Image 1 (cartoon, rainbow over the protein chains, first blue to last red):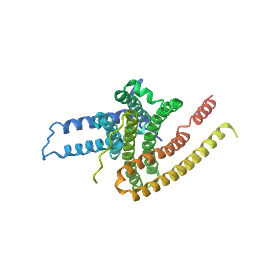
Image 2: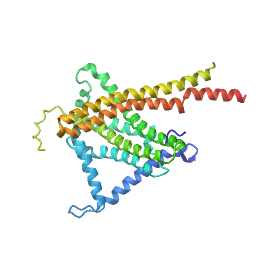
Image 3: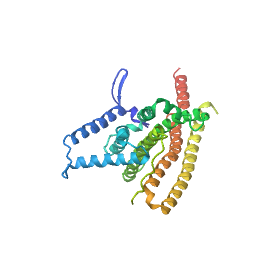
Image 4: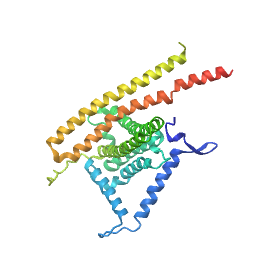
Length: 232
Length: 96
């Protein structure tokens, strides 16, 4: 019973192993990078647009609106990081449709790497926004006694991010594998559809949590002007 | 009972108990949170985007404890270090 794509070895030479995680991650990177490059070669601003450009615009403006809703005031600054997180995890889950593919996020190494990226990015953006002193002071808020607890909470929520994504992806793949040995064709297909849904939800959750942590690290203590009343 | 049997029984029973308790309690918590979110939605339908997003983030937090229990069960069943150690010991003893 294979727990993760780490154990699927494609090529091995002494110490270096090309396992399923690495190969599928490279595949996803190629699809994202080459696809975006091809679509954005000829951008047009008038009414006649290619449908791929429309798709990208829907995705980008949707992510921007979500980032702004969470409380980050200039979403363009964080769009690169948070958008990439969302697109990578979502595409990794979506490609489960392709036979023979296993999501690389079903390996703890990939999810730990993504969680470490968030762990490093939160202080980086926080220092960029508040200055080094202002950011370090925020660890001692609300009282100085909370300093060890704030540090522990930083570490534990990074761990929680990694294990949450890993557990969801691995459980989806494992349930399908177990069911395939027991039941006929229909039930594993239903479980694959459920796995797609949970994959998209987990991608959304991962990026929204990263955005919430960034918002907590970058909020400045200047008094905010009263928001204009929303027209519904 | 030798140590192999004890390890096997303990792993199996613990894996079952972990999954059982680990699925029940988060489900209770998630049920309560969804019920409260539905009440809030009924009272303020125009805040539905915020309420829905906060609901999903909260559900993911609660779900992660269930995932921790699942991961521990999987480790006990498929990647059990104590079982592997005992099996390796038995293999070398039989090979001698």
